[in-house]
Structures are given as C-alpha cells and as structure tokens.
Image (cartoon, helix red, strand yellow):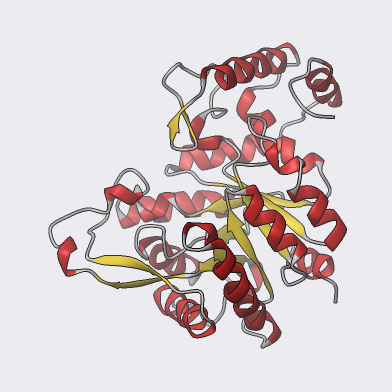
Length: 324
C-alpha cells in the first residue's frame, strides 16, 4: 500500500483536534473542563485527535486517553509524537513548566532521545499514559530542536520501523521548520508531515520547498497551527496579537489586515478563511486546531462547515496577498 493510500485509509477528516490545550497550554484547566472540550469536538464530528508527551508533560496524553477510552476504538484516529522522553525532575518541585508554555508542575523534564530504543520507549510510555493498546500515527517531534542531522539520520528510520513492525499504521514528522519538513519528505520513509504554522494564510513558506517535496514523494500533509498563535483567529487582529508565540512583525500584521478586509468583502470571516485555506491543496489530508473551551471547538467546526467562495481566493491572489 502506498503512503497516500495509507493516509486515505485512516480517514482523518477535514478537521482534527490538537490536544495541546488539554495539557494546560498557557493556563490550567480541570479534568472536567478538558473532557468537555474533547466531547464538544466529538459531538461536532471530529474523529482525529493529536497529542504529544511535550504537551503538559504527559497531561494531554492522559486526559485524551481517558476520553478516548469512552469511545469505540474503530471510530477515531489518534496520533502522538516521539523523540522526547519524560524523566523525573527533582529541581522542578514547587515550580510550573511555564517556560515551555504549560501550567503544570515541573516535576518531570523532557530529554531528547531519537535512537531506536528511545523512540520505542517513547511510544510505549505514551500508550501507558493514554491507556490505549495502540495509536494510529507516530510523528517524530521537532528533531531540529535537538540535532537536525542526527534527528533525521537516527529518528526517521526509528519511526519508520514502528510502522514496518506493525506498531503504528503511519509515521511522519511534526515541525515548524521548513528545512526539516522538506528533508523528511524527501527521505522516502514518511507517510505524512504535520506542518505547523507554515502553510497558512499568514505564512505560506511551505509552498517553496515542503509541498513540492511532498508532491514528488507521495507524502500527505496535516496542517496545524493555522492561526499562527492567534494572528488570524479574529477578524480584526490587534497590534498586540501574537505570531508564532511572539510579537507580530508590523509588515505581516498589515498584510493580514488586508486579507481580513478582502474576506469581509466576500462575507467570510478571517478565521474561517484560515481554516479552509490549506484544504484547497489536495496534498492536505486534515487541518488540526485546538480549543480550550467547548464553544471554541464548536465555533471552529461551524467555520469549517461554512461556504467560502472561490472568488475570495482569486481576489487574494490578484491582490498579491497569496501565491497562485
């Protein structure tokens, strides 16, 4: 079976749920609140859920696993990530993991391990946290933050072996860095890439090297972080809005505001356009977004179901705001 056929068989759906929020991303939430957000995604028809050990030092995996165990296993797809192990951190007692963006006790820390043994241990520990027998997809997570050459040289064969040994159905790489993603696509070892924040209305940098490499090698794409940390999450982005976890460059903010104005002329709100944009490319199998509250999750599902006229995209290209 080809890589593309494997991903098609998984039936990810147009909209997936990214579970960083239920790992206490930026703010703490209760188990009940996390369950409510996940239930809202399920009720909205979402059947693809993505998590990682990195998200809340395992809290996201625990909460997602508790939720999914209440659902028929044949009805959902779940992915997690490998490359980071969680180990005890005695220095974190009484502290929070806020440096990494998560409001959780820092009683554990992340340790990079992209060896075959480390990747397998990572998957085993994720399954234990989730209480599941298997996940469908394993992504090598941010190998460039450790050592890109070693990460791809050792990590890619290690994740591919998980698939080849029948432990997962598909494998890929998740990253925000186009050089990482393009090299992974050309490796011949991955089925799909999780492209975070690089194939969006605000940032189309994946168009240059990543998407051509995917097209040439039969690799599918899951588009994540399509709001770029909030830049396109509202119709009227404020001066203080974040872009990729930091300050938005003024020129980019001006461009996004022009995009929002054109969207308004077509009766489309900016977040709706941001959700729909990646799916115009047939390489994109799904768009994964988060949401910490049920109303946010339902709103994203409603936006994904909304109609976006083709004329909008033509006008954005004609105005030089999107590449053809």
